[in-house]
Length: 253
Image 1: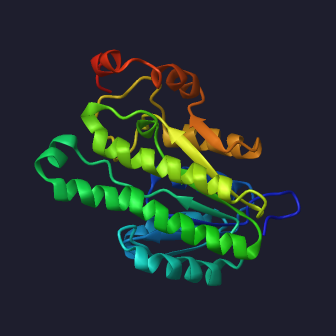
Image 2: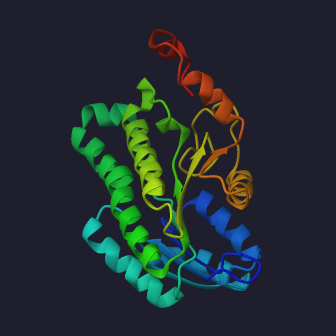
């Protein structure tokens, strides 16, 4: 349950190694969040993050979570609820970028990425919604991508999974109106992280900490969709209507 000043007190991160999600959690902990559960595939690998958040004042644990195993997701939410009590926020921050050339050559790899990015979002999103609806409050924060606003030929498998995630999250948010639960979509642009290391930065590239600040501000303002950085809202307001022949001629990145 949020405290008397409205601050998030407990958060579950599904994809607990995400640099963007952890930057958001750092800001939540600095604003009185006191309980954190990180859902990761290998809890032992998250030991350093757990200790860092504990030293910042948050009771923190890591539990096993695999986005590719939908049959386990309700149990993950139940376990987190037992550890946290009420869950004020669930952050969906998992995903794989992959490489379009690899997907072209290996459709099975493409399907596996889709299973993680989209099927995993559907399963965890519905499981989180059921849990938060039961308690009567909470926020589901879905970390998507502007790649899903309009897909590009150089990463269309990844972009299509993010498009599906985005559409799902928007629909989930509409379905939750009146329940006390919100679903908020974050649409980051290019972010300098381990996942994008070595890639050519796109225009308006930024860092996880800057994204986190934008997200916290958007949450405080009650936004249902948060563009990060905000200028991308206007950029894609134009790009999404660009004729396809012109869209295909835009440089990659």
